[in-house]
Image (tube, rainbow, N blue to C red; front, side, top):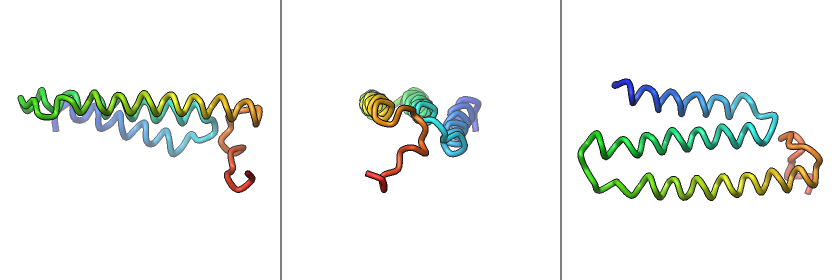
Length: 98
């Protein structure tokens, strides 16, 4: 395993570990999701360069588009939950209370 593979695999693992362990605020969960998307974007961007292929060159752009939509939706949920519940704590967001 090369250093590049190790770096984005460890970045993805650390961000998923942060998502599972630090689930107190919605903003920290969103930041962990964005770091996971960033590590996947870097991995998908480096894959065609390492293999000298152009067939997968559009895949990182598509994933970056979905990541931007996910970030916008997450920030809209953050603003809506802060307005209705007064904070961004995840324990306040219970679907069974609606």
